[in-house]
Length: 75
Ligand SMILES: [Zn+2]
Image: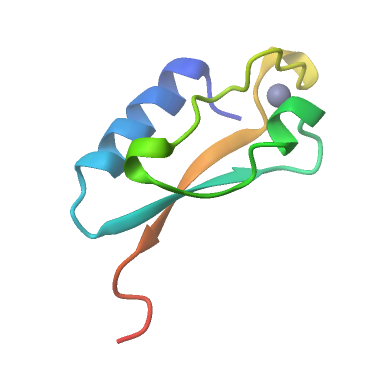
């Protein structure tokens, strides 16, 4: 699972990539309810900060990560 710092640098990379259309918040099964609630795809300027406020994921490691939604999925 990523650390908070790794999540932030991943988000910055995705935002800077012009091929990335949306940014999806992917949530693992073991994620806490606060993180589960953020699951979904977001516009680049509306992506929620991970880990969620009040995160209580196991072992202090947020079970969430950012995923790109690319423009060229359907060629
Ligand atoms: Zn959490």
